[in-house]
Length: 155
Image (tube, rainbow, N blue to C red; front, side, top):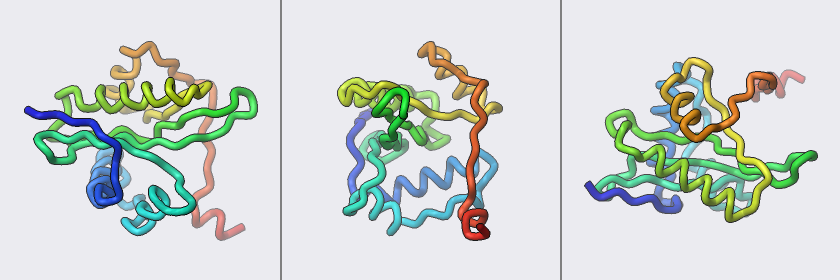
């Protein structure tokens, strides 16, 4: 079994989107994915770059990814937000998620961010247990708020 973690490339975007759709199905929201390959390509590699990602390859085939971006906290300064770690279902339990997570932790340290953040659904017990192994702070105090594109357009 040959495992490689490397920076995602533009040619990886279709595979990344496939993983995103698999995650959406796992999170019981398969119809919520709106982003396209063209949009991910533009936002990942265009003039208005929004994110970076790493991929996990098993014997040369992409089977996972970690996608992150930088944000700014008025209290802390530069922060890194880990949007998703995704490992295709058939390859879970082989340590690929840990390798991807460790890579993002490494990047956070190298970039000297003041905080690394991510979210996890309250019913995703495997992920919660995974993060507890890192002694992560699981904050139940803050409530997530959002507007969907539909809500924004109604305003």
